[in-house]
Every structure is written in structure tokens, then in C-alpha cells.
Image (tube, rainbow, N blue to C red; front, side, top):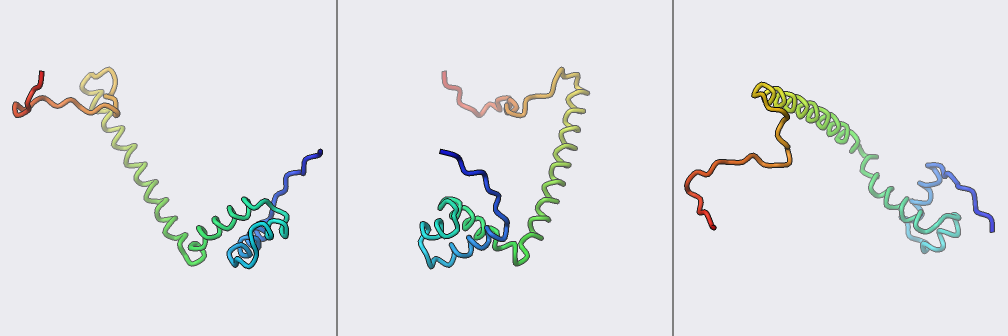
Length: 115
């Protein structure tokens, strides 16, 4: 039994199949035989079409603004990390404290010690 070669579908074909799936005139099995693709592929393209529909009406501008904010935040994190390293080096600390471990706080005298 020979294997079928891998097919790369165009964006137009994917959109055509997804729109047909959204209409719901035929069952998933009928659409799969009509377009000669697997039913799971039709479901995936339909889901992606529904999720990406908001970008048609201008949602992509908000995504671009979010990307810029993330870049700015990453720059600020890097700046703060460098400042922290400079402070820890000025204290003659062999290496900076681990960010995973919380800093130990001295007891204030109000805590109850269970032994």
C-alpha cells in the first residue's frame, strides 16, 4: 500500500472549506468526502476561522499595541535585573540571591514558635 504524498492546501481552499463547515448544510463526513480532507482538518480550519474572524474588523491593531507593551516590559525587567546585580556585587556577594527562594525575614517577636 503506497502512502499519499503530503498536500499543502492554499489559504483560499482552507477558507472555502471553513466557510462550508460554518454554514452547516452538510455533515462533517459529507464535507470530508466532498473536499477530500480529513474531518479533523475541517474542524481545525473551522475553529481557526472563528478565532481569527475578529481580526477582519480591526482587532489586529490591539495586538500590535500589546506586542509593543511586552517589549517595553521586557526592557524594564532587564534594566531592573542589571540594577539588582550591581547592588549585589557592591555588597561583595559571590552571586545574586536566587529569585526562586523568598528572602528570609527576621522574627518580629509577635510570632508563636511551635516546638
